[in-house]
Amino acid sequence: MEQNKGSIVYWTLLNHGQWKLYLAATIDGLCYAGPHNAPFEELAAWTQKRLPAYRLEEDSSVLEPYAEELIDYMEGKRKEFTMPLDLHGTPFQHSVWMALKEIPYGQTVSYSDIAARIQKPKSVRAVGTAIGANPLLITVPCHRVIGKNGNLTGFRGGLDMKKQLLALEQ
Image (cartoon, rainbow, N blue to C red; front, top):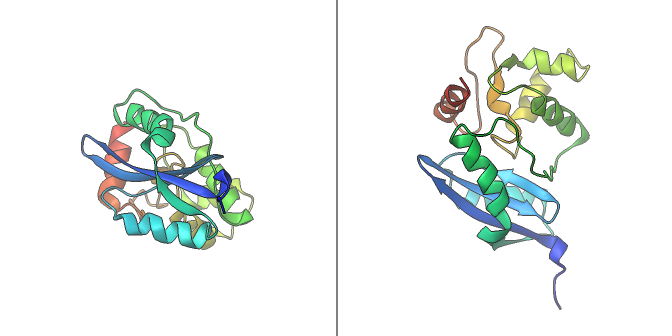
């Protein structure tokens, strides 16, 4: 029996300059942009957890428009993304991720700023957890969130990747 096209997560490895990251999309949009140099198993585990009924299929042609936008960003030619996104998370995570998308290019905010934006000022820890679960690094710019004291704090892609992304935007 043929699986319907809607139950596939297409993936590719974006390898551009110093950057090497896995991208994945459903027919609805980009659903995963992984950390630099992370193993394929991280994408596979995320898919198994968030989209257990889907199967992974390598197809760079499906990911080409997403890869082009990311390459433009990496080369300093793009400040905003226009690609469709297919976010999979809880309603709270979605509210946090939407707030992240509103942080302007080249600017940073604190975790408490995000908590205030989603009208849950006492939820700073939960905001941090939701940011840590963001499956779309770079495109949902969690790298723009720093500690209240101005220090760089945790980032799923590692602090080196966070520093590189923030430097790119300066």
